[in-house]
Image (cartoon, rainbow, N blue to C red):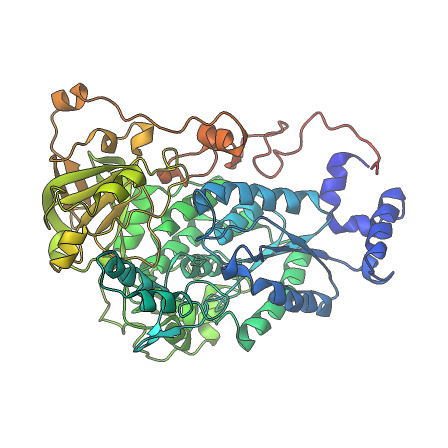
Length: 590
Ligand code: FES
């Protein structure tokens, strides 16, 4: 059997009567699998990103047992394997920096293992897009189960304390308004269990995306991490994976412009994370598609913002779950959804809505009374962001800032920001525009979530709670404020952000969708270019610096995007492309 045949054979290798099948069975029998087990079909891998270094995903370890039970119920053989896991709070320099590496790990493990399909177990922000990207590139049947949100906690008099409540306390601590005792108490009060962030941050946003793209079961994004309903979802996911493998449901067929549009319209209706723009473009690229700023803006501007949940709204994720979860959101905006797209339960959104019952609930605005007639994410353009930027309008505290002109106060990187932001002599007032640059995917590297520039402490003490802030960085989906993110090209890639100086006038107009400077061509030409400080000479940093794309292209690596024209060349970049002409037929050697 040739190497290519070995890869394509998947789980059928266990039934092979020759040497290859014997060797496969020998090694599984050594693990304790029975003679009956090693002849079961299909073989379903479980790509588990559970890790003690990723507390949001730690609950996936126990859910894997339920997934296995579901696979066995349908006659399949589950084989669990570990993958890289990326923790939002722990991973340095940033989680996005490692997303593509995790996607390569997932792709290669799916492609290279004798499995017919896979269950993807992810949760924390970057693990879900990384798994989806890898699965789309590997193109074996894949079903996803996300970790689910962690419990809401209690801090002092707030009995519904969620992760977004931490950020204002951090701001208050900077100006001496939180005691040492409260600071210590906070560390034990916020996370009272495993699971993902308990507001509509990036993790829950991407869990909704997984539903909309047809990878995760409808209604699976919101049930809590530690509840019986998530265990039942895990078992059902295992069963569906067997079905998907038998029906040969390919990820490349799930990711279409229609399903991508559905996903982003739901993100817009949810007031979801700005990170979704980057991840959806990256997922699209793995299927040979390009969304582009115009589509993002068109879809967002023609979708009502309806989910009244934190951090942009008033209610808890649990309330949105009671209201019917993501299917209820789809039902609420059904006029702009492609209802014929497939769902992970083997049906379509049309059928899911037909059998669902959706009652009025304050977590979802009623018809005719949206929170906003347009989606919460606004794509910006202008001479300061020639290839685009994004702003989450749902997070603006002060509506007056939506049309604002002010003087720039420029910070070169996070060290400069930290050293000067609280300087009493900093030349800044409430009308200033705070600018942070050098924080893009090349310059940082990895586009850290630092775009939520803190309010200078002297202004914070004076009662200022929001200012216009700009950067080439990202922002946590749990943060809010008038924050322009993902300015592209970034400073380190030669974008105009790199030549701004403190005192330059900047204008933000959310209604017009523009972000502008007023420098003349002569001034622009006379200023020195921003110098990218990153000069890696080896390893993953070297690979990243040479191949990562800008935010408007999803920050994927150029060689990982799917090129349907590639055949017969081993680029490792998509289904079929991985099979090089140079592979020789050979028997498996151990
Ligand atoms: Fe992991 Fe928010 S930090 S989901």
